[in-house]
Image (cartoon, rainbow, N blue to C red; front, side):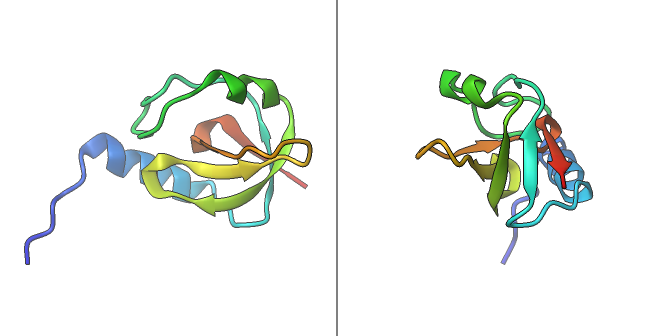
Amino acid sequence: MKRNKLPNNTQQYIRGQQSKNLQRGDKVRIIQKAEGHSNGWRNGWVYPMDDVIGCTGTVLEINGDHGIRVAFADSTHTYAYPYFVLKKVQ
């Protein structure tokens, strides 16, 4: 069976995300806004995501090139953020 090769920017995104070494349960801060579908991230930024810039949340899951799903204590909504807007905090 032949597997489809991922586009180069998707491969680069996944490698970059893996290099962050984030795991489920890690605490992360959203440090900036991102353009949707940038740098190989196959997801979009929606305006409610702006509300948590500067806030700390918990990694729920790693979704490949769709991003890292993060939950916040004061919100019932979760979104998948690109790794390059996340900063791991202690």
